[in-house]
Image (tube, rainbow, N blue to C red; front, side, top):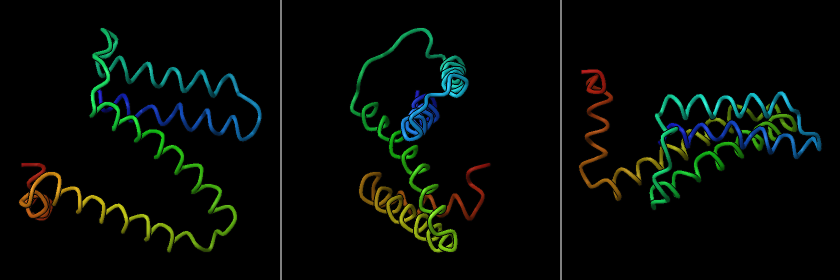
Length: 126
């Protein structure tokens, strides 16, 4: 169900963009709905909802935050297009820092070295 929840950013971005432009485009809403229904079908979620768990609720923040970031980045880049590289660099650095903190303190002390070993030794594909 994580793939389904992450795909909800399509709906969130469509709704926020429609609200910002004060017009709701029927083709945009229909395409967002079809995209979500397609992912639900692929994920096998059409058989029923299993309930709100702490992981489910936390995962629901991803489409909202990620979708909102799309719209903010678009506005920022429209206002100052010369800042694209520094902005992308800071975004990459902050994501790497949060992932490192999560891997170290939430997943355990050995998680971060294991991830680096997997990346550099090709462990993801073996």
